[in-house]
Length: 273
Image (cartoon, rainbow, N blue to C red; front, side, top):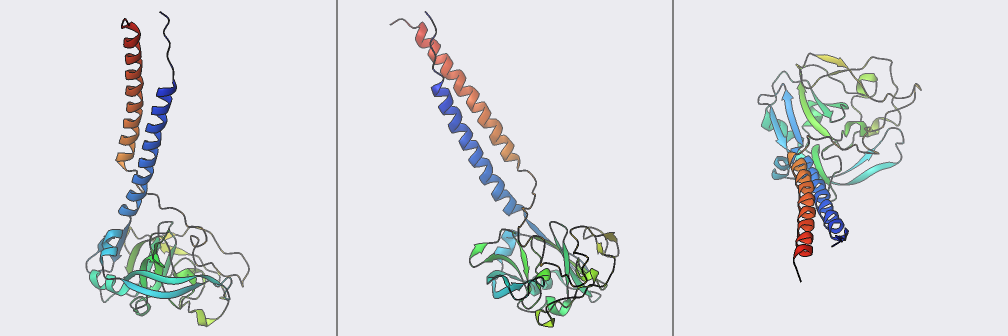
């Protein structure tokens, strides 16, 4: 008897299994990226600390109504709303600020850096935000600094380092206003200088050449608030092992289902009517 076999059942099962694996892997990766995000406070801290996003959300919330202005186009609002997060002063208090601390350095996942003096950093309105207008931030964490130009509002924040010297961030080290008050004017003259950023993973006195986009050569040009503001880059997180396990399980399921279908079909053909 000629063997007759329709591939439709296998195709349907394969499609269902692959859809399930893809959806599960995507959800698992997204959840893992959020859960694994960490904010570290180190340097001249009495007790270096690391917080997960869940840790920050479990702390008392501070809501700040604030607007980002960029020195490139000072008369236009970049974004505005109610930012929800944790007071930076509260985080620094937990870590403990050593008397030798002069400045606070902030680093992003893409190595962008900025700074605040200790007085500004401990003002009540300065927060590490994780939501805006009730929605989670795509950049996970952003420093909210009301009244300062956008280049102080670092996004994708991962590290806060207490410095014992007059540290200056990416744009500040190139001559832009370190105070960065919006009221100070609509343009910031840039003095020629070399930019050096201390590596947050090494001792405070260690310095390495900075990297990243440079402003134009025009003496009147000014930096945007952060390279991530207009188009946030996703944070690369370690691959969750469950994603690989699910993918392998899905493939194994497809092979098993196909084998069972072929076996059942052959048994039916061999069984006399």
